[in-house]
Length: 377
Image (cartoon, rainbow, N blue to C red):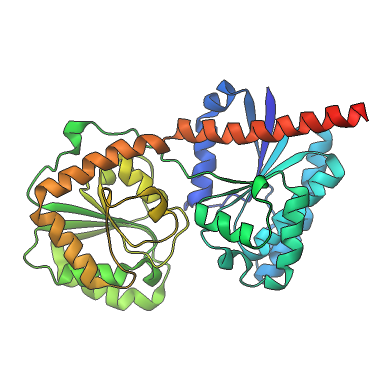
């Protein structure tokens, strides 16, 4: 059994973001990894609270030094065939590339890096002056860099990353697909669902404006998420008051509560300005929800016109037309729901882990081949 060590900074507290959700589900499905002969462990170094007041760049620098020191101590005592680092942007990305370099140089352990960001400009926004150095480090010290979409993969290739050392692995969903009978709309009322941060850049205000202008449509909107943008609070609350019992705000939801909202919904609304690979889209597919979305992140790569009604970023008029169309055209709504349930099979957790283990296998096979070649020489 080969051994993979996941290395990342898991969030603390009640909120669990996308990366942490993926890691939790990996460990809930250890048996699938073991089926492909990979054992998994987690290295989650927790830094002292006294560093929290530092600016982000210095906090990440301090964390990086301490994480590296503790990981080296861990690897002296425990073996690993692959260290799989999960990273995102700016100072965290810098820290993690340097960590991969140190692991490769000091321990000879192969590293895999997953970049959980949807656009290269987000990665290098405040560290653009280190871009060339980091691209060279990826090529030299990281065996495979995994991206969430073909778009960001190509952006990194255009900057000089060796294409042969990159992979695209779409996120999975973790929901049990519903039955055909459960998929059918339960009433004439259209059940709408929004899941995400309550933030202007999620397109939330355009969404509420559109629904406020649809008095002829019978709908109920469930809003699930935490307030992260104080600038919209007043306007948000005014819309909620005007819409009355047509809308309910539930805060952050997870587990069976979240699943229940998806299973009740007819339509997922995702009018975001930008995304990476939104997990809510995959959850909507498995729940046979129709989707109304902007063309952001990986959504245009995994969804076609058979799965979604596209809207322009910032367009409340487009959202209004899309919702009204699905309300008036029952057959279209049912067809999209059927198409999405079928598409969800490509993104279940077992298929995802199988594909990930194939990436690991390519890395370990190359390692074994390198060792044989070195031995002959």
